[in-house]
Length: 379
Image (cartoon, rainbow, N blue to C red; front, side, top):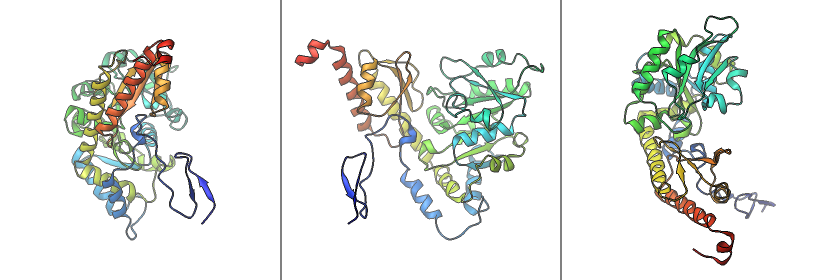
C-alpha cells in the first residue's frame, strides 16, 4: 500500500495505490457548469476514441457534426468548433470588427463582466455597455448608444451582441431579436448572439434553435454545449458567410483550434443529432421553475427576475445567505442589495430542489427569530 493521502472533500484517508473515493460536493446551485457530463456524451466520446483520424477537424466526426448544425441553423451555416465560450465570443467578435470598432452589449453581458477583459485585450475592441433592468437590450437603448458614429474621436459601434438566455435568466423572443436585427442591419451592423444557454431559451419558448437565430436575422452565434451536458467545447456558428472573414486563421491565432477536434465534434453530434439538447434544457428549466415556485411562498424571500430559463434570482438577508452557503454552493449576484443567483442543470432533480428549498425556509425562519428565541429554541 502506498502512503495515505488526505481527501480534502470527504475528510477520509485512502491509499495512493487504491481508487480514491469520488470528490463531490453537495448538489450545487452555483452554476450549470458545476454539473458533470451527461452519460450519453461520455459514450459519444468513448465511441470516438477508436483508431486514428486526421487532426484539426479533417475527420468524419467534425463533418457529421457540421451537417447536423446545418439541419438546425440552415444550409449556409459554417461551424467552427472551439474550446470554450470566451473563445467563441472573442473569435467571433474579432472577425466582425476592425481595430477602431466597438460592440454594443448589455452591461450584464458575459463579454463585459466575466471574460477578464478578453474581448478588449485579445480582440482589441471596445465594449459599449448599456444598463438594463432585465438583461435585455432594446432597439431604443441601442439607438441611444450609437451617437458618435462617423466621428473620428469615437470608437465606431459596428456590432450588437445579445445573450439568450440572458445573464439574468430572461429570454428574448424571436420577434424581439428580429426587431434588433432589422435595426442593426439597416445601419450596416452585425448581430452576434452569445448562446451559452441558447438551448434553454429555445426550450423555454418551445421553438427550434433557428427561430431564435437564423430566422430572426442573427449573423454569428456562440453556441454553448458545456452548460448543457458536454465535457468541453463550444461552437462558433456563422449564419451569414459574409460576416465571418478570416475565421479559420483567427481561431488558430487565438489558440482555439483543437488538434483532436473529433472529441468536441462527437459530443455535438450526439447532443444535436438527437433531442438530448432539448431534454437537458427542459429539465434544467423545469427545476428552476420548481425552485421559484417553492421559494416564492417563503415569507421574506423576493424573486427579482422572471424565471424563464434555468436561473432563479432572489434577495435574501445576508445572514441567511451566509448560513445557506455553508450547506449549498451558490453565488451572490449583488452584494449591495443581497441578490443571489441559483442555477439548475440538466442533472438537477426534484429532490435536489425540494431539499434546497426546505433549507432556505429553515434558515429564513431561524434568522427571523430574535437572539433570545433562537437561544431557547422557539419555533
